[in-house]
Length: 39
Image (tube, rainbow, N blue to C red; front, side, top):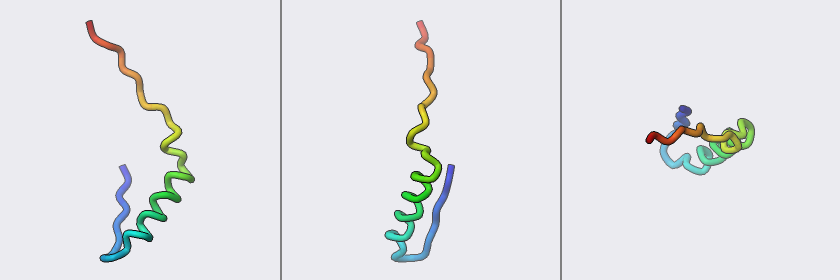
């Protein structure tokens, strides 16, 4: 995982950093693993 930390009242900056990371890494475009169903 990834942890992004900041000082008090820096939420706007943290959201910009997180958004930039998601755009650069395209982490949301990756497929989630598929699991076989058990009988």
